Length: 444
Ligand code: AMP
Ligand code: GLY
Image 1 (tube, rainbow, N blue to C red):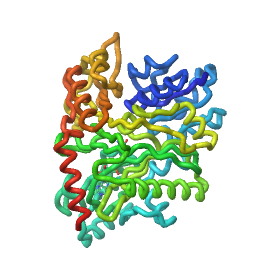
Image 2 (cartoon, rainbow, N blue to C red; image 1 turned 180 degrees about the vertical axis):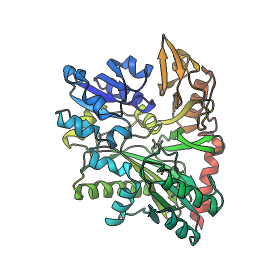
Image 3 (cartoon, rainbow, N blue to C red; image 1 turned 135 degrees about the horizontal axis):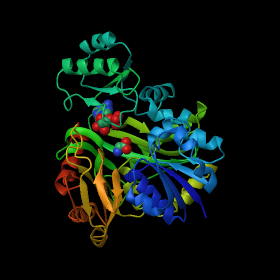
């Protein structure tokens, strides 16, 4: 019997917990708030700051329960060196050490690595630490651009021209603010050319040498229907029964996979061996896939798409990552998946309805043939309350996208409270529009 220490308390970690439990593991969880899904699957859990290396280090129970390995869900603990700390205590970890998690921790590191090793899919990028210099540069820059803090902001610090700002002057003001107010923690800003196309996510399991790609997923970052409103952690996502996307073929998949293989090889050459799950977020442009960002963990919600159809044992995969045996034998079912997140009213703004009760009927959701994953909710006396983040997600599984979408929608009917969800995700009309847009882009 494998005892696993699981770090994290979101929908992603609920999906990881479920897959590990189905693989025969006993779970010991560290979470920020009581996620009822993870709590139910765990032998024991502790509530506390799961991102704090010293908090986890000082947990005696980690030692007492003698866990066989740890699985770290979120980026924060990885970027801060949680894997190093646990490995130094003799606990193997699924998730990269600090020197490799920097691939997500610093967008500058990621872009420089791609440039140095001549990896395909790089965009034009420029890094500034001086507010005056960024202003001078942008004054003469004629193409549409994107402004990103170098450090981590959970996808929320990125401003895209045409979406989050419209004039160059607005862009200059924000770029200066990123430096002056140290948004993302570093006082550094990246200016990138704006890519046009369709976004997609490719996640892989890797032991530092070998990679196994997972089904492609498309995630929806904007808070409101029609892809409007502020960027969020992700409002939902879908994947198809053939593991591609409606606007992508296997050649595009192979190109994205090659980019991730080259990144893993480059990390090894740099002496930063990367073990765990690697997440590539790409834009499929007229010239092929370009890298938007690289993350050091599963995506959330994307983990719920792929883990819901994983047809291999996640405990075995974990050992294959740790022991350097990742092979081709990992399988996913040929089912489509649609994830829809339920979030508190006001999510995406500064006025989030936290502490509100959400009524959920898990039995009815199950009867609809959907899965339910809890995220940032807090359970108290059997009742469930919102926090400031995403609350819970439903996953519809089906023989095709539209069946999966209908199941997800039916499941949403059994959840009520001061909440909202994006009903447009993976609807036929939306998918057809995307396919048409991509055809037009490729025709030019
Ligand atoms: P990130 O945090 O880097 O994933 O960025 C958040 C979102 O901003 C992405 O999901 C994209 O929608 C958008 N974005 C980031 N970089 C670019 C880019 N170079 N061109 C166009 N859109 C981008
Ligand atoms: N869904 C985007 C992310 O996990 O980074």
